Image (cartoon, one colour):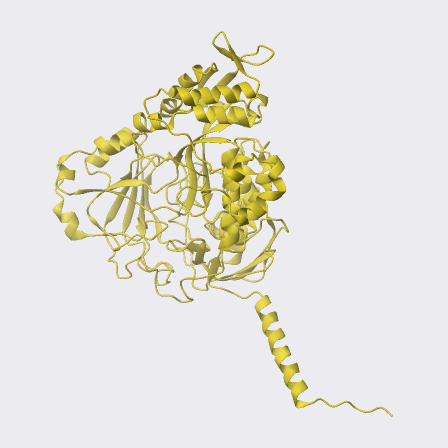
Length: 625
């Protein structure tokens, strides 16, 4: 006879408690809809927040802002020669079109929904589900739908001119999209490849793309030049234009997103006009006369001496530095092509780096205008400082035999000089490194054991680049190098880079913070032989590849910091680039007729979107007729 086993109250209570805990754990494991995307999972602003802290929610609307543009745009197609304010590629800050998310300029790696009402992300980042806002509208009144999102990404993948895709790192960025599944008018899912490195950063990259109207472009050839202004969904629309002359935007008064927390207090100018200037000198003079309201100045000569005019003495012109920390890297660097046998030896690359007298260059060429870049992630907590800590060593240990041993024992530091152009001890150290690599000076020429001279070709595109390179080439003559500086027009330059037919070129590196898939484009081995790719140095290094993936797979700030610092060390100690100018906040000038919030956001000064026209300030300024 079988006895039925009873359940005691204590056993029942334990069963219930365990069930609740397991249920809660399972619930936590299930992805849920959020009001944005955060690299680290934290949000400063709650759902339905009223406005960002760094805006004036009651900013007055009105007035016109006049800006300069050197973009010789010729049509309103989404890409090609970029139309000011109408680009769709990430980083273009579109005015005509909206994006799925917008960044918070006072948080690192956090984006909040704009067109997207909510986003759900799989724990393993194999899919992303987007729900669009029901109120989102195109300027013609039609709703923004999931089909518009699908159309935009199909265009980026299939129809955008291939060289443009390569140049903007889009091939790497959007190759992770396996398919797009449209559920209904407002919801769709991106299915992503199961690749190492797919993270919240990839989701953020998807959200930076401005969405195009399918119902408008499906009846037109999107790649054919179009002179009819297209419809958008953003806060501005095209009011007037003259190709290669000017472009005038007007504010959309009933803009669908004006009451959202991500937009309130922004887009305050009634009109924004871009005037085209082919020459920076002419644009500079136009600003001095008050024909342009605002400009960035990147030439130290003019920043120091070019604006000493009565209007500045009267306080009508303001000069200041703006914040910019959403991207880091190098605006300009000398890239050493490691695909060349003679440049594959790290001792040769270190000697070339030693021979560059940065302090002379800083004193004579840039006049102390820039801070010296000591890292690929300068002025951030992710730059390699001191010696590696325990977390970094744990990541680097598997590659210890393949890495310079100094990486583990010495802080990386670029050589300093007195800035007078005579650095005998530094050049002697460079010559010693070259001798160790098999290069000696014979009759004034650096040669190898076969008697072949060490020839170096620099390729440049402008007289401005020539000012950077020529003094360096002269310095290398003292070490016995045979140098040649080749100035090329655009088509020739592109073909030369495509064929890797150079020794040293001037290139930049722009890396989002936190980084996304651009790291693969710039540094990963799989892109070393990609024509017109961004791995200009031809880096093929297992340790670099591993650290790139570690950065992209980081799930906490601690993991990201260790991986980024380790990557920085490897890049620096291998001397792939000679750093010249780091990405930093721009120096700007403007006529003092604007209001702005009382403080700038930490990671980006919100110009022009958080500023407004101030009638009282403008009335003080009396321009000559």
